[in-house]
Length: 75
Image (cartoon, rainbow, N blue to C red; front, side, top):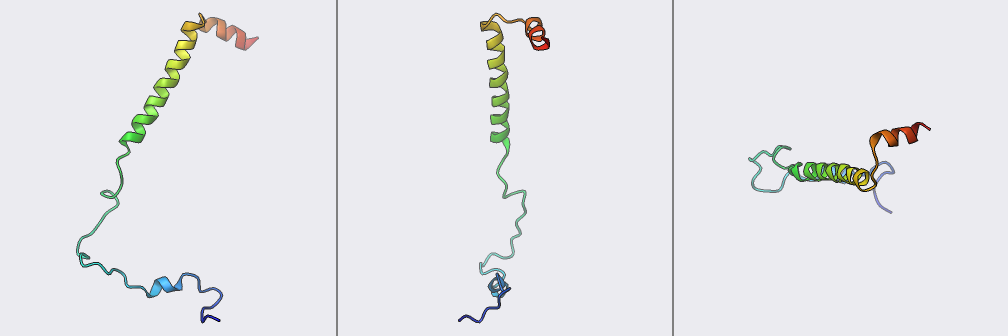
């Protein structure tokens, strides 16, 4: 049987040293560890543009007019 109590989950983490590395004088912030969101933003914009281009191509290729579509929707 172990000597842990029933509600003793994670208590071993309290006994570990705070830092064992030698470069503890350097501070890190969240801004220099985050990756750039630029690729994600560009991908999202590309998806929007592709979606709108597909809709526009459907209107042109199908010889559809916005007035006709609105009339059919309202029926």
